[in-house]
Length: 594
Ligand code: PEP
Ligand code: MG
Image 1: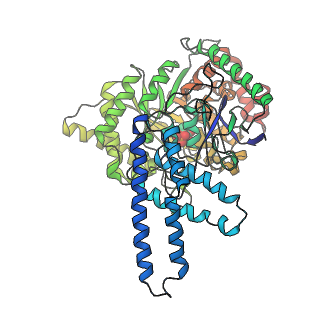
Image 2: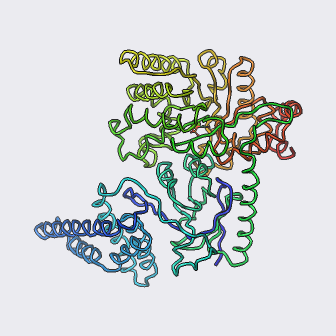
Image 3: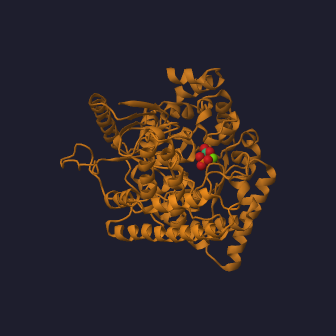
């Protein structure tokens, strides 16, 4: 039966493929594809874990048997026996083998996938006692996962290339050759980054807002994605055919042939549109009235510069350096990349841009970007308002100094701008600048080569936007982070789909803060850019041009569509119109009218 699930559109386009479910588990589970030649070793890992758990249960059973009846009720021994039986059950072990051999899932992923298959069988049982054994199975799998922790491979190699549906070769019996779409309850930005190296054709998650960092990484992958689809991961089953409509924010499960044909047509239309835009990549972004506009790239990893250059970016406007720090399996600061490792990464980015400027933002960790890929730490009541971005860096000055030294050293290889996230106070500005001076002095004392950098601040909190003069006295340029500016101006958690309908880039308060910041920078003769998602959204290009913005930073995949808008724009007309829009009670309506 065809089911449509509504969520939030995150990355444009249509994806049609078989569902690959990534399940949440109480134990953190890595999901990655292994290589064909690693299959036997992966099965051995499961076997070793099973033997270790069997031994653990045997010891447990032995100690229970020795306890006095009051300390160890009879049920406890019986329960351990059930667990021992389940551990040896062929349905579990054969299923796991199947997912590893046929799909090249890593062992943990195979185990949680098979758990789901068997759990469904339990759910369908008539006998209540048997139905309740599902919890036992979950506990057994959890024991196995805990055993396997620490024995997993670190990297996610790309899975084997799959053919698109309908391509020449007949599709394998189990749909193995079809494109894959990923369906999960939630994915951390670090998980999402891991999948960046794989070949998923689309993404769906139950939770998340349009500008959550998971959504941002999905968008940077330039494949259709829907977040905030609430129940998707419960409804979609492993291998179901799924359509992801990233334009409308709709997920269609088990589509009928007519719906499939309709979306297949839309998909081809989208491809034609992309091909048409692709022709603009060597064209300069100049408006009809001759205004030059810089279209820059937002990147997460140095390797993203390749896509940025291909798309015609004239520099990197935002390198979210925190992605270098994520997913290192530890919160310990000693496990973070050291100065040389960071330096090498920044130099790769600088060299990747072939002489064009690279703006490196210092680490913005916290809120929905935890270091270790886990959900925000529960001890922080309100992580978005907590120790995040520059606040975190100032609380860890040694870490911050290491990063700044690495950036300054990379600046000896090309034009580097240093950008500080989430500043709000004069005191923070003073502290930050003092640490940057100290990093320079450290390098001088060591005799290490380093280069000059332009210093920039992000305008992400209303306090900064309202005291922009202060920022202009201390910095060479400002970059408006609209994602956070909207979140903090409207008090709407950008990662929470429950309030996503209130997250409104067109709110007059937001637009006025953006407009005033641009105007103040222009009046002071300082550079200003927008690097939040608004910069890559074509529905805002004309407004931002009208407000005087000439520098936009966005995902490389958005550059050509924004360039098309720039080429059609006449800023002499857009200026007065933009002033009317920001003065209006209903800017969204005016923007829609054009
Ligand atoms: C922003 O807040 O707009 C921004 C660009 O930073 P991030 O999305 O990484 O918080
Ligand atoms: Mg931000």
